[in-house]
Image (cartoon, rainbow, N blue to C red):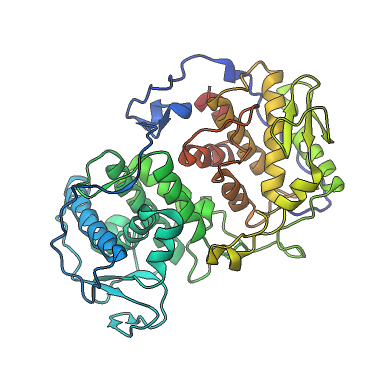
Amino acid sequence: MTSGGGRRALVALLAVAAVAVSGCNSKDGATGDPSKDTGAGAVAGLPVTHFESGLKPDAPTPGIEVKNAAGSEDDKLATAAIDDIQTYWGERLPADFGQQFEPVKSLLSYDSQTDTEKTGCGSVKKLVNAFYCSVDDSVAWDRGVLLPMLRQRFGPMSVVVVLAHEFGHAVQYRLGDKANMTKSTPTVVKEQQADCFAGGYFRWVAEDKSKYYRVSTSEGLNQVMAAMFLIRDQAGTSGADRGAHGTAFDRTFAFQTGFEKGPKECAAMNTENVKARLTERPFDAGDKGKGDAKFNAQAVDLLKKSLDEAFKGAGVAAPEIADGGSCQTTPPASYCPGDNTVAIDLAKLSQLAQPIDREAEMKGDDPGGMGDFAAFSEVASRYALGIQKGVGASIDNANAGLRTACLVGAWAAFTNRPGDLRLSAGDLDEAIADLLQPESLISADVNGKRPDSGFDRVESLRRGYLEGSSVCSKQYA
């Protein structure tokens, strides 16, 4: 976050008294319709499931040809993924767009450390990547560095999501105008749509329609979301940059849109509606910290001021924030119902607020901290619990955790304007990084319990940010 002068428009978040309404689904109440499911009992209309994700034990051997394949575990995953994805699009293109699907013309596996193969888009030498090339209608992947790294860190479905994304570009090439694709379409729009198409395919897998793969809606999708977080653009990248793909917030938004609404919604993405909701932007002029402020007592004072102003519309007593405080139930930040305070461990939060070491993160090493907004959001989440308690809402169940993350998102949108504490480029990604951690507080209830589904945790923050606080009470009653 950044700090600065200037008066902020007095825009209060809507009161959250509506959280006490009835009608939410039970733990097992998934209906199959994302628009009718609320809370932690479902993931976009599907039940929350727990099992090992990856290739099915009885998966067949793919009958497609891959040039230069070495028979490695990653080649097997990639080949099965391509065959599976082509089956998916063989169903969806006729059903959704009225045209027959044509498989890609060639597939290439290569080792970026040693190989020098060429595609219509150039040499793969030292190219740690996976890509679709429209020149020769091919899909290629690096089995030497990229796929093993993803599989080892995030599990086999991370390999699948990367290829599902690349195949999304092949679908764009086939749909053309039906997918709003022209020669002038910005890269970031194409990338967002490809992420969305990948989400549509993963919904199909989650519905157990794949003959190759199975993915749980808890741990399985969590791994997919974590992989997408890793391959986000660097904070401060402009969405207008030629190679922009999107922030983690933008990419997970697109993936979740495809998962929830399907390929037709993805094809409706265009330059106008994508750019209207992109969070990817350069750092503000004069932002010497590049988006990271020091998390100290002064920063906590600014945070308290921001939260008080944002939530004053609730009409309840605002929690105080104190270093130490009367309880330490969910360190490094805890809501204490007895005296309506948020007890913090300033030293530990300062460690959490350290900038992410991107180089270490890419190597799989400890990235240090998660950025200042991760720390601000953890404290804001405990503060939001106090507001919810004040209006009579539950604060000790899974829906309370999702509602809390949603309110943190709404507060983040409130700070996205000139003022003493302002949202900066990369901040929302820091919140997502925290949400995907098993010990995150942003989507936790007063006791520190959080929903199993990272998909739900990220979505709740995103909905609050994009739709405002009213959706928090309606969706997570």
